[in-house]
Length: 108
Figure 1 (tube, helix red, strand yellow):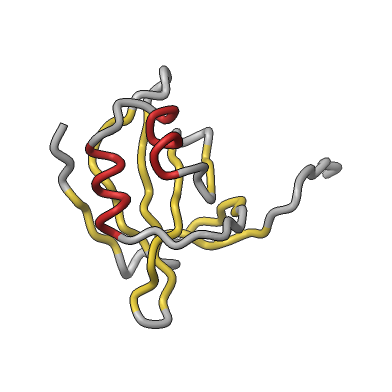
Figure 2 (cartoon, rainbow, N blue to C red):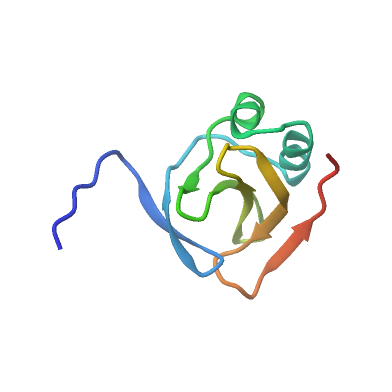
């Protein structure tokens, strides 16, 4: 296979799946991401509040934000959006494997 890769990124495993991951110099708390998602209707509003996501999976229509780790284990907030980029569903807090997963109900 011949593929072209553009940009400066790394690959991270989130909930057991490889994601194209962009390192962004910031620390987001669990509470900050919950508040940002609850006050956003779509991806544009979310990015205005919390910034660009660390990872985007366009085929699954998901974005991932790295949040404060749990001890030494990295944690990610995975947020789903629809065809029109409206936020849908709740937030999944995920680790590197499927062993750690938590759903946070969002008030909209």
